[in-house]
Structure formats: C-alpha cells, structure tokens
Length: 613
Image (cartoon, rainbow, N blue to C red; front, side, top):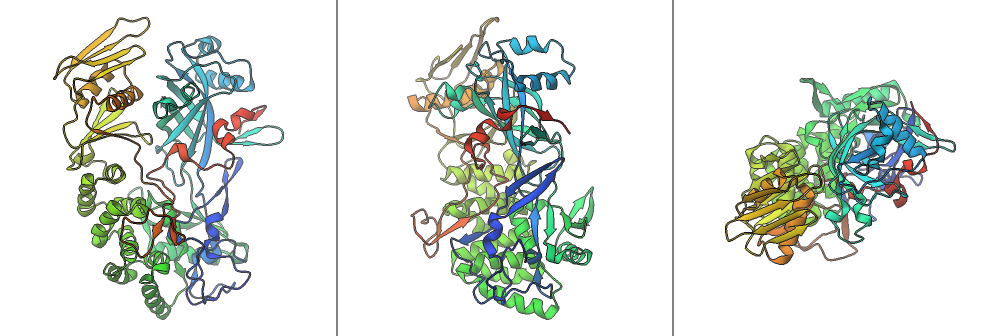
C-alpha cells in the first residue's frame, strides 16, 4: 500500500486500509546525509480544517497505477526535514568573563579542530579568560544551497565557569550533523561554517539574568557549505523506471527552473525509486507548498479526464471546507487552472478569494495581489501565507503592495512586508540600508503609521526605522558597564565608553536615533548594546517611537470561517490550522525537538568517543 498520501483523488472512495490524506503531516522521512541517517517529520503546506479530510468523502483508492493517478498516491517527499547541525567553537573578546575549560572529550575535540587551522599554543588560547568554549547548534532548512545563511544557538557547556558571553565573537567553526550510537558519536560531513557576534539571551529576556548571559544566538551566523537535496521516493508497490520516468515527465511539464542560466525540468529520475526535485525560484521561500503542489500533480491523465477534473475542482474551490486543497490542485494543473482560480477571486467568501489569490501568485499571476494585501493587513491566520505569496511574484504590483503594507498598524504586517520585499527584491532602494561598522544593518522606511523601531532576532542583525522622526529627548540617561549615553541639551547626545586596557572614547552627535546608533557603533557598541539602549529609553520616556523586537508573522493561528477578516482570534472548535514550513520567517529559538534538553545541549553534551568520516 502507498506509504505517503497527500489527498485522495476526487471521485474515488478510500478503502478502509488506505492511508489517510493528512498522514503526510506526520510522515517520517529518511534522508542519507553522508554516513548518517537523519529522520524528521515533514509538513503539509496548506490550511486545512482541524480533524477533517474534506475530499475523502465518497472517494475510492486503487492500488494499481492508472490514468489520473496523483503523484502523492505513489510517492512521498524526501529532504524536507530541518537538518540539525552542531559543533564546538571558541568565543573571544569577553573582557575577562570567559574560562579555561576543564579536561573533557569536548575540550580534546576543540583542540584537535583548532589545530587544523594551524594555530599554535592552543592550550594558552583556551586558558585566556577573554575566551570561552561553547557548543553551537543550528538547523539547516530544506533545499538550502551553498552560501545560504541560517541562525545559530550558542551555549556554554554545563560545568563551564564562564560568567558571560556578552559582547563575544564566535571564531570560524565547522558544524555538521551528529548521531549518537551505543559506542560513539558518529559525525557527518562538514555542512556549514559558524561565525559571528553573540547576542546573549539576556538582551531579549532579562529573566534568569545569570543563566541568560551564558547562552545566546547569532542571527544568520551559519553559512551552508553543502547543498541539500530534495526529492521524491516511490513506494515499493510502484517502484519502476517507467513510473519514475512518468512522474518526472508530468512534473517537468508543469515546472521549469534555471540551472546555470539554462531552463531545465525540475524532476530527474535518479533510480527506479528516487527522483531528484529542483526548486523553482518562486517557491524558494515556501518549499512545503511546492511539494504539496508536486504531490497533487496527476500523471497519465487523458484530455477528457482533465476537463472533467477541472470542472469538479472549480466546484470544490467555491466550497470553503475544500477550497484549500482545490486551489492547490488547480495550481498543480498550471495554466489550464488559472481560469477557475480567477473566477474564485470573485467569490463572496473571503477564504475562497484568499486561496485562489495565493495559488495564482505562485503561478506568477498578480490578479489577486490586492486580496493578498488585505489578508496580510486584517487576517493574522493568513498573514504568513499572504506575505510569502506576494514575495513569490516579484514584479511591480507585488512591490507596490508590500510597500503599501508599511502603513499598516500591525507591526507584523509592516516588518513582514519589509522582510518579504528584501528577500524577493534585494536590490530595491526601498529596502536598501547601511552596514554599520560591519555589525548590523540600519534601514529607514517611509510609513504613515506611528513611528516604530524594529530590532530583528533572526536571519541578520538589523534595525528598521519605520516612518517619522526618531529622536531621543532630554530625559535620555543610559548607563551600562563601561558605557554612558546621555542628553546634553535638546539637540545633542554625548556617548562615553570605557574599556579595559584602552583610553576612554567619546562621541557627540545629534539626537536622531540613526546618528546615535552610528556614533555608538564607531566606538565599539554592538547590536545588543543598542537594543538595550532603546529599551531603556522607551521605559524611561526618553523616546516616543514604538519599540518592537522580532515581529515575525506566526504560523498555526486559528481562522474562523464565516466571520469578517480580522475577527478570527477568538477560540472556537471550527478552526483552520496552517501547516507551512516557515522558510522566510524562521526563528532559531522555536525549532521543534522531541527532547528540550537535546536541543539545549545537543549531542556534544554526550560526547565520549568520535568517529570522523
């Protein structure tokens, strides 16, 4: 029987032993990474009603391959897990708050690793109290390509005597997948490089102060060094070169991408059981949806069957319980499905409008841009999906819509639109900014809404000033370890910084936040220092602008059918749950794990013996 199914084909009854359509959401995929085996759960990428499989009523499933078989009936995705990678590294520049790690397998591993960089006197380096050994953890997203960045978590080892990692910088370190066996820790190939400024947890959360000084994050500190492959694997009953070739032909008829500037099909049969699947640019930030569409492609379908199925799918599109999967299947058909989707834009039901607009966006059709913009503005359950869909279009209409969202009252909508525009059109002057002191990005964005200062916690350290004149007033007085920033009148700010073994540094600048940020960075203040400054100024009334940290659109929000957009926050049993894979709006602090302690300490905490590939 098929091991993976996304949804049964319309018009077929599901037998008692058939795999249920939503089982893919709990699918355990096996991907070979070098000498290791990594297992992880896949996610569906549609919005579906909790506890309901709308298309299974009155449907039948046939094990044999026949005309009209869905790709998801006979195969499932591989490579959609988030690959956990980890390693050990050295954080430096700690101003005496570090420690010399005691003898341990972890220390031995780090010494061996540092010596491969041809560095001498490693023991003296580790004994320096300006340095500290740390464990590094990260999650490489599915479909990641060489050069892509991802967030890192750093943590001192359990018995470390390090007092604080604040202000520290992680030196370049190799990180890789690990697997604990009964006798040793098996290591995969080097998968990424880790490096960057550490932002301790206390910067974002002042609770458990001492504990939050020895752990933190490095936004965008991981750089992928090995491409991650994604693909399809046929179930045993469908395994054959003929079937793999038929699936590849159907996928390539629907999707093309560019490899080295040359258009190519996305599917390549590697064996009689496995196909390599490339990812088109329009789905780069929503790979989960892309595979959902792939699995809903029908192969070996006659022209008459296609016409009949289009009519059925259009009827289902206008029925709210089935609108999500119907839109996916019309998207899977391609150009022939656009007519039905465009008629869906005229529906009286907002949910139908939204799913039709989303499908059209991934088909590079901007007919539903205004519907997507409205969804981002007023419906939190659709916000992530709407922004990702707008980012996929990449033309003037989507740029205008995203820019228009800068005027939204919602911080999520404003910053989400900024990030979507930056990811889809990085050369746009709207999202251009300055790389201040090679520490953080600083952006100014026009907005008619209340002035807002946004600090990110993921992807890259960046400050975005939305609208208005952002100024400190005469109440400003900020004092931290070795740092004083105060108002010296209505139009002047004085900055004084003391550091051990160096002369005090002074700067005078205007009261504008951008000037203060640049002046403070020039004398050694980092991104975390500036966030603490603005938070303290907000609490003391020294600034009128609204401070927001990491306002990312969230997943798994409830949507209540039959109410006006924006009224879906109330809890109800009739909810719709999003099951996307959040590539664009990822958060390193919210990665799923079966055991919290394994995420916190990783497998290096169990290191007793190692085997390198």
